[in-house]
Length: 287
Ligand code: MN
Image (tube, rainbow, N blue to C red):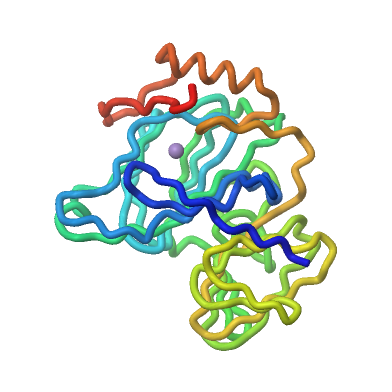
């Protein structure tokens, strides 16, 4: 039977989020170790979201918006607006600092923000890779057309297509959009597999799943997802992580010494500063 993970409610600086990874039931699906649906939340003119400068280690973050606009700034000097359909991919390696804020333009009027942020754990061999940032506009992401279903490959490879996002280990992250009733086979060859309906319901083996929960499929079961026109579903996963994983605040590591080192570096102000963002840095709430 598939594992259904109901989200826990959290809050990022006034933005309500629904977190389905990590949970007690399941810490990772392939290399995915964190999954938040942000919003939808509407901000009045003048208001917006301000995630102030904060550090990461040991992961890549993937931000994907369904509505609204955010501006990413980081310690590499990248400043990049992200809009619905684009992918922002930041690899922290041994340490990067970034902020995510509503753009001035989006603060000019009422605006709805809705998106999904995923964290992908780096394998131990890659935990010290050079930090990097990559923005991929919507038009550069491959789309595989199936009967009644469009499959946009956000990161990794699946369905015979590969995203230009420079991943560090095998994974798949695909947005499936049904224009009519149809079926998609998510092969066990992809590794661990989960799906997160954003709109419309999905049926697998006569069981129907609604938006708002992460469904983790059984490892070896063949899984054909069927849905009606209008359904929109994120498919994600990859080979099972075999290395240990530790998470604290914005840090991911294969051993706790790396987490302790990051905590000490952030407390000392030893992470690189975000270029073009002089905002007060975030404080580790459980430091
Ligand atoms: Mn972050």
